[in-house]
View 1: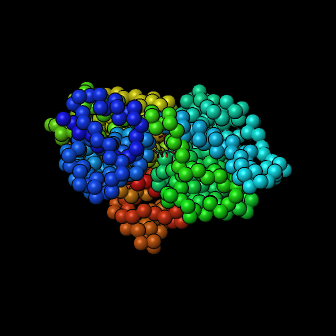
View 2 (view 1 turned 90 degrees about the horizontal axis):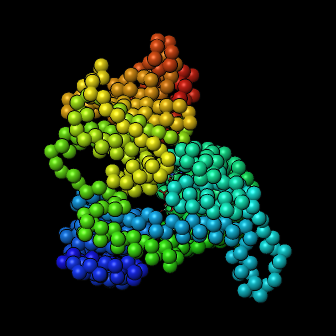
Length: 529
Ligand code: NAD
Ligand code: MLT
């Protein structure tokens, strides 16, 4: 018998679908304390949760029989995914089920802001007839700036167009063609900030998006702008937002999500022109039905057909070929991660070329690893894996091309070359393995290099003149940044050169600014693996 525990409230339709399978026994226990959960989880093969149950290390350790942890919803922050993966437990979510509800909520908040609906409602309930106080604005012909054009952002854009708005968008991995098909003009973030009348956020919470909206970015916006965050708390700095609305620097804002939830003490609660809802984006009958049904279907597909759908991690693969491929897989992921950090512009195509010995093997996991490395830094934490990455790339209109060349590259026994085509041309990176596992980056753009991929790497493009490396070394030394190794490459003597420095710690933004101000430095980037 397969035992399923449902520990948070879930729609009955989904539960009944599971119960119909005679080999599955379902227990619904939604009011357990953490200790009660720890006490019983050992009996179950499947744990299904929403956001209330925390499936962290202790629960995973106690869940000795667990095969699946399923999340009815998108965010998987309540599940320790790396630990579940280590234990070979599949973690799955239902990323599509609440998309429309979240998008409609964002539009609802936009309309509430434009017409002061919540404030007018409160006023009239308090026996006031304040017609003048609540003068609104139309959304027609206004500019709607959508940050993040994924599932929900895409639906919001569609609805904005339906409201006769001009929709502009920013998403680092959306191709211009795909955006055009959606009726969205792809712009830079700077342009989105300065041109939008409404800004709506639909990105995951990542290192990049933490406090994306703060006093400095707000300073770039129109005074009439209204900001909506229906994505994740922490993307907006609530203190800076409250200040900007309170002082009239911007016209208003609406939040559904907060850095600390429940968020009763957030500074935004005291500001009249900030409309707030208690994380209601997915709280519709339809969304809850959809996510429960999707999750039930996914659990049934696993036990009935061995199919893994919407897994956000990858169960460990353990076979002979994998032993040979693992170092190549790691190299491929690093090539993807580095390429995403050195390229510019919107992405339309990623090409991966394999040379030499490696082509004897199944290279699909390598291609998927390149894509995972390339896309992961801009997507929800732990949401990209080898199972879903092709779909994610295709959804964003990114073409993926793979080719094999049996002949050896003239310099290396095996070589993986990845290039990305974007609005700004083609960027390229290549790597090889010396022996069976010593990874090297051997090409960056048009430069030949020989770089061990390290955790922190400072990449500089500089004029090929004497003394540059000394200046860089001194500046890093003065800032107590230890250099592990340094590599240079150049196109021709006296032309442009590349310098890659492996360092033991990250370079602060302030120091990056100083490095960029060195006369011979054309550009510099901090790369992280
Ligand atoms: P998605 O993965 O389909 O789309 C996110 C998009 O953001 C991607 O296209 C990605 O390229 C883009 N992106 C990443 N970093 C970016 C950056 N720095 N700037 C601009 N774009 C960037 O995700 P989704 O399903 O559309 O969900 C979006 C967000 O909404 C998530 O944070 C999710 O957890 C949240 N969500 C909230 C509710 C709610 O109840 N309020 C409901 C569902 C989802
Ligand atoms: C989600 O991640 O799906 C949403 O935040 C809604 C939720 O389930 O709470």
